[in-house]
Image (cartoon, rainbow, N blue to C red; front, top):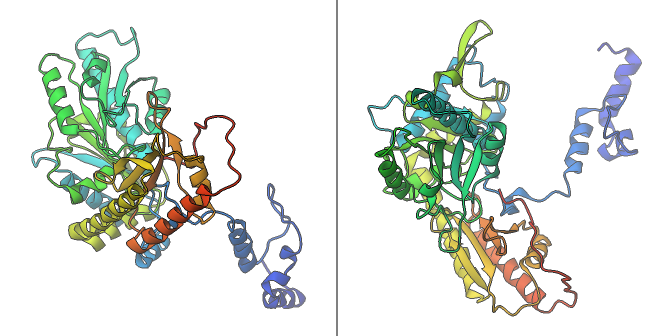
Length: 468
């Protein structure tokens, strides 16, 4: 835009004007339609920044698994690469190579046998990765069904998973017309019930999902025993069942903390694994990964070759254009921390979870459901004989007064009358912060014990906070 002399003078004076003396700070800005005139950058920044003033502090969010801290150098690198399009591999070949390296690193971490021709890709979080894993299982099942003459129109294919599944699996089954067969968890089996799981399997089963880190409790499904059950079943049928591991949380944690635990591609029937790079992969929200042990488990129909900007680009992701910055951030972490760095961070994180468990247990009021033994997650319910007038929802309210966001919610179907509270311990939740939290936690208990206004007309059984 060209400015006359007077306009230039006015623009210059505008920048000299005190920030909170500007016209934009003197009236209500349009919120649901564009303003007629632009505002200067510093004012726009401040207006948006102030809109976010009353939001919670992400570092105090004990509900989310998503990473709330990255090193300054990592965020600088990601900011400098926001404009790179991850899908445009012909224009950004070095970025494509970095993505390929990340897939190879994960394949190695998850023990893909050397003779397998594995394949993988980055995704927008684990939800997209789960969709891809589910689609691959369905397409593979369709080929098997066609080969053996099964009537695919007789009824829907089905997917077997524990009732502690994340909502993305429900979405997948709705989108792709799959019957979701959920195996109820119970107090004896807070992960998939291995005594009953195979009762849900038949010729129309596209696969079983094992969960390495159930959202509600942090428990791991016993994938090794599940693999043995599937192997025994497969010996008796032409309709071989495969296992996909939803390792959104655990697949970037277990290899460093318990490398001897067999849950990955060391098991014959595990054909694909997904994870969230933005959980224990330590990247900000927006990155997921999926790896197939062999290309035979990723049907060719799901790999598209797109002529894009003069180059042929193979793509297997659902999403198309997106920034490559998160892929680059993931590679930075892999390079920066190495195996021992990740292990040290995760060990410390687990230690903090165990500390929190000990402190919560010491009050004598709570029954622990998970002490951080699998994932660094602490969850508990009020004891039946706690003899208090307040509920976990009251406790969550009281903690929120100090800024702590703590989810409170019922367990899945079959255990929905059990209300629990959960802390997710992330890499940035150090021991000192944990001590501060416990001080506020104990103070909240003290305040609730003498509170004069506590009235519950009916038993509460809702959700408080975002549990996924």
